[in-house]
Image (cartoon, rainbow, N blue to C red; front, side, top):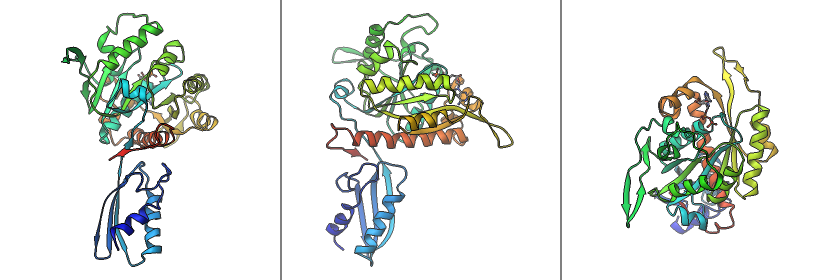
Length: 358
Ligand code: ADP
């Protein structure tokens, strides 16, 4: 069987998420034919490749029944959000994701910290901007006590983000005294943020997360409008009071044409030692909201003391207790989010030439 024939078959296999064929997507990394045994190394947009795997095996079985497929391996990549504003502000950043919540105290920063740490652990180049001007908590959650260093680049002073657990971090908390009451007004907040966004040496990043200020007021609206966002993730607890604000968050992003990548329900339940669950803040609110807006429920995270202590001790739970059920849920949420980023980029008008580098 010739190389041409192999590529011809692979060009008829569609990636189920990106709705394009494997050859056009540049997903055929390599293949080797040993006698009648074929091994394939492919790229993928997703963690779950069962469908593609079986489609390939079936296609070969029909067209070349004598060929035995010995292995198919998949390596996941992340696509680039093509957007002129993003290119101008963050030329080397592939995607920017807002982690938002309608109200404070629902675990937005905890989740932003854990998602960033989880992405870095999976090998993605990751940054995190703590844009929560009301209570910048990322330095505490990552155990950072120092201030960023300054470097001169072409006669301009630039800040170097602080790297911890593989995540490049910049926080408004590095620049202002967190204990002094700073009253931020919309334009002031967004210009301060914009400055430390553009005056930072980020280098190449697959994903830059923004831990947004909670709520849907002027400041949040200005930020969602000025930041070139790939998409937003909304964090909520299952209770109605939090959901009502989360819905406002969804509408705010819709208004400024930022797609919501999904909803994360936090503090979903408390796992009792006997195996029963205590639904402290109600049940399934996140799931209902996701179906109401036809968006994805990225995951449900229980209440667990180790999530809280991880934050307080400066070591996100996915780093501190990777084997914990909650850490596994957070890791799974990261996988879902990678899928959603790839899907949203594939559906963007600007991305007619979707490139996924592996
Ligand atoms: P927000 O950023 O929404 O204001 P935080 O991330 O600061 O919220 O979380 C508020 C508090 O709740 C913190 O003390 C945090 O450690 C704790 N917390 C968040 N999520 C959980 C959880 N799933 N289980 C236990 N504690 C949590």
